[in-house]
Length: 372
Ligand SMILES: Nc1ncnc2c1ncn2[C@@H]1O[C@H](COP(=O)(O)OP(=O)(O)O)[C@@H](O)[C@H]1O
Ligand SMILES: [Mg+2]
Image (cartoon, rainbow, N blue to C red):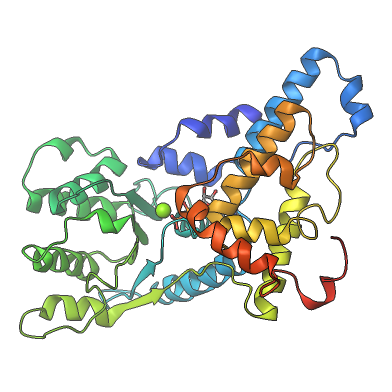
């Protein structure tokens, strides 16, 4: 596999179709071989530099891991996307992935979009019957305070449409529809939708616009964001005031993403499976089985509060430090020096106290009397 092809993805923002294709069609990274201390010591300075560089890139990009959360979301998305492949102008169902930040929405949706792109292109070919490039997925990430016009523009931006910097909101919208039709887009994913300006005054404008997209674009509309339910996306609402919104709600299926929890035995088993999967992916000379899943289970749960984003940040930063300092393993001591995001740090103290008093444990029953 060419490492260059993979490493180039570092500069890719995925806001243009070519970037998305590069992401979707690039081979998965290969895990660097695990070396022992002795093998590490035998490397020349140059070979060691290269090995550590590979490990930096690897640890910074572990995943996506097929967590139960990701698997459930994908099942739901396949059900809806495939049932929407009906002919003609039947209204298509929309999906909203609505959950707190850092639970893996973007990661899981991108992994799905990647599979969907690959399947559609493999089955139907790179070009449409009309001879246009086939783009099964259009994926747009919104940024702060986006209005309707910016939303339309970002779709045109994805396609590199020359008219994207002029035109009215309506024109831009029409052109966006043209792109979607001619490239036979089947999945339109709008990520970070909470950035849409969505206040009392223009709430109706927003919902009308989303409804227009849902009705006119022959796609599975995938809305991703934080607190979409609170913004009234699903509510039947006050029919007089909010008829447009109510209609969006009726055809939109809401899929959530949950954090890991340790209240139930099943939850604790899922947490352990996650740590075992991570253990296999860590490339450190002194790692051993049980390093995360037995020895650091409670600790990692307290520091991440079960949020995959925080867990991955901690593991990534910990591995970078373990390589850099020569520790070559993850321990409480090392991880204590690694900073995590503020939200997790704040929740950590309370959880740690509960875990220490043994009011809580993150380990499944069969695993409690193993390692310390
Ligand atoms: N299934 C997964 N496997 C590995 N890492 C993941 C997975 N899901 C999320 N992450 C990590 O967690 C972080 C937050 O995920 P992200 O998808 O950005 O969450 P959200 O979009 O919900 O805010 C990302 O940096 C990603 O690396
Ligand atoms: Mg996101």
